[in-house]
Image 1 (cartoon, rainbow, N blue to C red):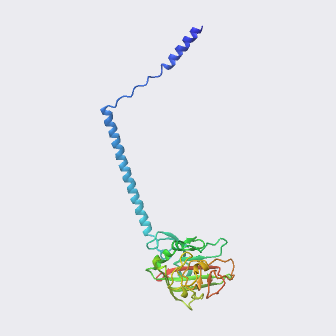
Image 2 (cartoon, rainbow, N blue to C red; image 1 turned 135 degrees about the vertical axis):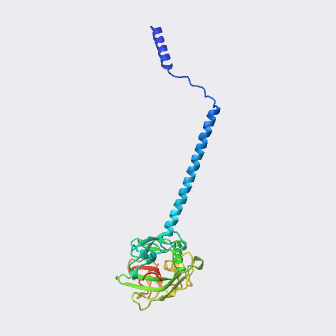
Image 3 (cartoon, rainbow, N blue to C red; image 1 turned 120 degrees about the vertical axis):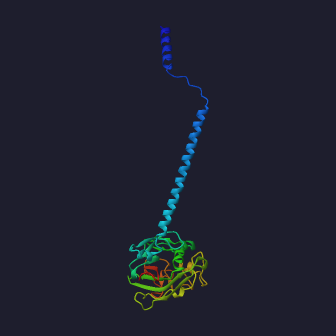
Length: 292
């Protein structure tokens, strides 16, 4: 009985495994196979070359489109307004600089104003005690408080005559304005020297007083670069970046206080009040020949 079972198991084993083919030895590649393989390699190399050329063409097309879009961007808010836009922001390309989004005022005095500085009441105010590099590049949020950047101011005003307008609001809600028919910012090599003048005294909309005459023809200062003529470091003393001299009659980048409390480092405009800080300040520029 044991022998029969063993034979049955042996036969089953043979039947099961007889269906498996014995692996063939690797065959040698013949000349014809080598030729076919080389052809496939050449075809792949050609396809790769075609793909690389298509990628290069696509990159060139993308660069061309980018250049076309960039060249069509307005330089500032005045050009945006001239093209029919009433938007409060615009994507612009100042001369020699990369594109960026800026805040516009398209309503005040005919519109076309590019906002350079915005200060306003906030429970989380932007710190304007910033570095030279920050003031150079600009900082803050164009939907709130910000400085547009000294490089932008220089790029916009170095060749095209500009005017400057300031809107100042106190803690009682009183709005006063000031306008200058001349505004220019020098290069970084010249310390971003301020040129401002031709204050529109007596004109409607210029009742805030000329607080910038004291700062005319002076270089910019920050807490890490002292450019003022005072024995003290004005930027460190008054907490902002500005065209300080000895030290200021206008300090729009000073500390944002939560009331009209008196503070030497506050947002002061001395022709309005020599000690009390303002609630909000907006300063904006526009080419002289822009729509008025």
